[in-house]
Length: 423
Image (cartoon, rainbow, N blue to C red; front, top):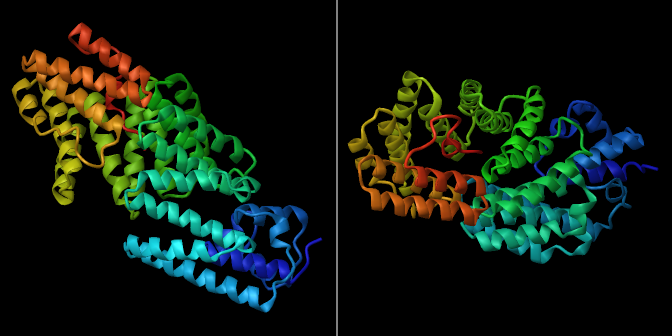
């Protein structure tokens, strides 16, 4: 039995702690006004609706149905929620060290009887550690969360952590481990409503990892399913990421024109968002694929835009990516001297490059050096690229690299797998 007003109060409290509006909680099957009535204790939801509300909050009906707290415990909880809101404000302002201090203090204060707030604080702390470039602590925090009983009691939380771990391991060049967590995320999100963002995020992660690890037939199948799921999504980062992932799978399945159309649509969706990092990477992905398989006018227009973006960012990794793109553009124009000149600006050791991206950069430098007649330097780069792919678990990309080294030319037939950057 759902006891009101205790259930409604807990719903409102957890919703606010997670920064959600009543509309966010309502979704497509409830109205915000109905959520308001539940939170005010004026409606007693049935079992199905109560489960749906609990799922969206990443908790259980039992936790939301707990007896009303004592005054002292409620005061403590409200204080912790206030600290969580303050830490989020610091993060939004870009003050990551302050957010870290606030969240670590909050986690230390929250006891076992404040599980939901403590879980949210630990999740936020893991995110902040990622932004502070502390990969080991970021991974440790996520693995601790993954093992938390509360995580496994709620599919939404389970999926959130599994997807984040999959993405972190992919960025670290540990594709085999990443695939396992992405598969876990896809499995648990099968229990969620079709419109839940976690379902799409899990599938985007698995498609991306399948492409990178060389399971292209699997990626094509998953991409077809993801395309259907992405169609009804509202405009924004989630839909853009899904279309981007589908584009990579379509290209490797022999559909370059459709892949470029999807990337164009994804860029249009991202243009209205605040996801600067995502827009930069998508722009590179679009340009690299257009240089490999698109018409010259499209590739030239995208190159011009890539130069503008690199000039605005000004980081070492942005400079290296621009050099990769300009190298590929020169090779497309059959300008080996220009390609070799631009390739010298490629720095595979630039900060912020993932192991997979380092191997890809080396591959493009190797192509330019070989085209310009620098055989020994090209061979060294090809070997380093192949070994980098192997260490990351991208065995098919490694195999393609060894083949290109031994044959002396890139196979003209079929897609160029080194031209695919996934979200």
